[in-house]
Length: 368
Ligand code: ATP
Ligand code: MG
Image 1 (cartoon, rainbow, N blue to C red):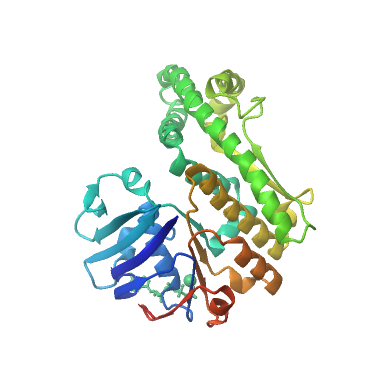
Image 2: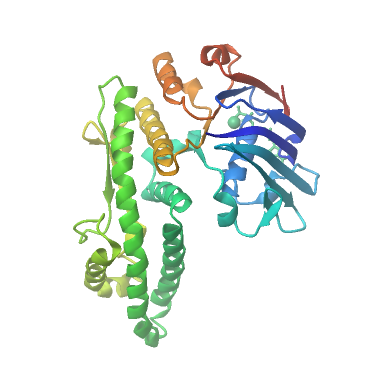
């Protein structure tokens, strides 16, 4: 089992000094608005991902008027204990440590401790543009497949370079001669992305559909389909089998790309098509259905982590329960057993008693 035994915060957001121990099951964190509930989840998320889910600027995490901030935890993983710590400083580079040993890169640091977060912004997964859903796939796959993370970094770098070539080739036609090489390397990295995204989507789709059906008492059918470059007949095939189809698609759009000066071919346009009862959720889902579908996808992500690593990741649920009716609340609470969970809400201890977990009250940056 993977769980946080304790957390120490120092000058992190509105926490001056705070040390708290947690239970391996469900931890309910309640309090009024603006007291520090989301900040607490943000600190836990940072230990797992070496970044916040709310900001790209570490500076914002340091308490107003302070120069440094610290987050530290004792983490249990199987029967081993880890000490993970982060030191943020406005003047120097941040320090990431596992068991006292500095980790140079976020990738080296983030491998140890896995979390799945559900926050109100995740409703965008269903309602917003494709970029949000690509990010969802990328985030999961980068955590569990280093080969995917490398291919994505390579693809992004090449893509930006290709865009620059397409923008500048009007003035400098000689640039066009480099395009062929870029296209080949983009297709090679792109084929890796498509292969893993297809495998992920099919597992996600099955798992999320099961959860969603239980959630809605069997009245709703959720289906998620992976949409990628049209010419690829089997996206789950090995990357080298996908490659010729990507090259063919690029060739067909060669002129159009130069004319529009934009990159029209490749998995940077991928999407997940989400339907509820056969209708696109993006256009037709009600608020409750949107929430249910997004939550089903997130709980499915948690199952997939467990399937891959053998342990449930720590689940961080920010502000989800308050917006669900009692039947759906109860469903969520039944569904999240098995790993450690942090749930924030504005309600009182009622939830804690219901859950038979530990209850914490957050008030102006202190936890009781
Ligand atoms: P809600 O129920 O409204 O979601 P919350 O308990 O989740 O509330 P948080 O998002 O955790 O509230 O924020 C609590 C407070 O932390 C806010 O009032 C915010 O102004 C404050 N805060 C944010 N960043 C910093 C910082 N760097 N230094 C000090 N305080 C900060
Ligand atoms: Mg909050």
